[in-house]
Image 1 (spheres, rainbow, N blue to C red):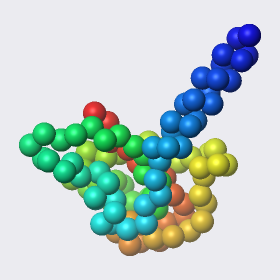
Image 2: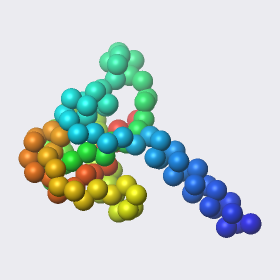
Image 3: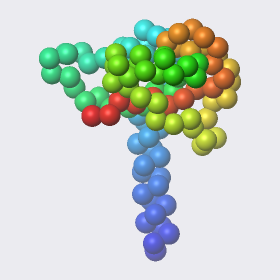
Image 4: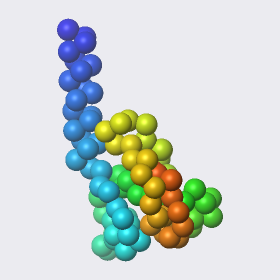
Length: 105
């Protein structure tokens, strides 16, 4: 019975995570996703963004300063993980993989 309860909780959390995670491939989309529509009364929209990051700590600091967004993790879950190289959505520098960004409220 405890196993069923744990599996049910896990399944619900996974569905919630997956439904609130988006892949972002451009700086404009990144800023649009994390910028409140009304800066006077910012809404809590929540969500995670999988986007390429160069690994440059200066880029990470800029994102945190401008948007209050931080890197949450480099995903290991094979369903989420993306080790395909690309370009950092902020700097345009080469990126080895996507990382998970989110805003804390």
